[in-house]
Amino acid sequence: MAVDNVGGNGGAAGAQQTGDAGFQNQMAEFERVSQKVQAQAVAMRRITTELSSEKKVADERVQ
Image (cartoon, helix red, strand yellow):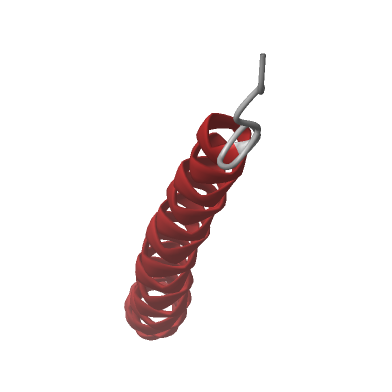
């Protein structure tokens, strides 16, 4: 009685590749979100700086 072991680990290898692909997709999504958050942080710093400058000008006018 012969036992056919060809592809015996095929399911595990396929699951590993699927897991690797899922991980790569998660990393790509993380990178996209990270870049978006960094861009928003830069925009917030710029707005904060502009508002601070305007406040200083307004405070000088009041004095």
